[in-house]
Image 1 (tube, rainbow, N blue to C red):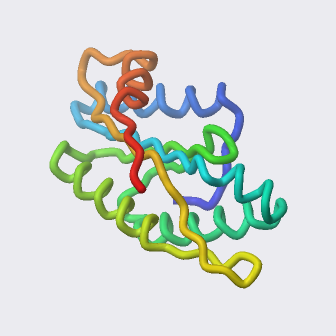
Image 2 (cartoon, rainbow, N blue to C red):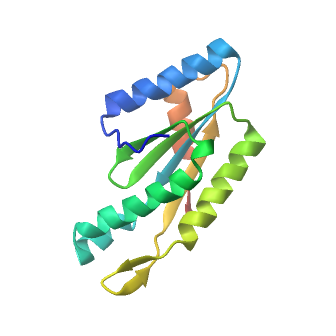
Image 3 (cartoon, rainbow, N blue to C red):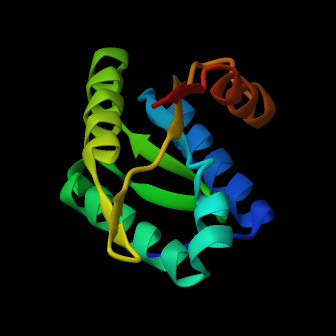
Amino acid sequence: MKKEIIEDRFEIKKRIKESLDYAKDSNSSFGLLFIEIPTLEPLIKDHGQLVKWVIIEELFLIFKRNYVFFDELLSWQDNKFMIIIKNIYDGDLSIVVDKLRVEIMETKFTIDFKELGVDIFIGCTLASEDDSLDSLVGRLFVNTEKID
């Protein structure tokens, strides 16, 4: 996984669609994860814009430590990320999500000499043969739950 933030929604949808097509053509599967950090905006408001980069940099380190799991990391918005994982199946996808959930929730960020944690929403879905881009992304958002 390369450390890059893709913010263009058209490009993000294109990459998800390419992964969906690849999975169908190769008779394989892929998972899509969604991670949202709703507390990011209030932290930025209270502590300044620098806090955003402190938290995002730490998230990249978490993602990098788990890079074997990820094929692409996409930034849906400033505080929302999507992760594409090719050639993964349901049980393995659940393990990856649980590992990320625990690691993110246990991470403390030092901001203005205080240790702060973040709340997250996390969801995942596995692509199926009859999925379209809209059905896959729609199901992803339905499967997202708050973890705090």
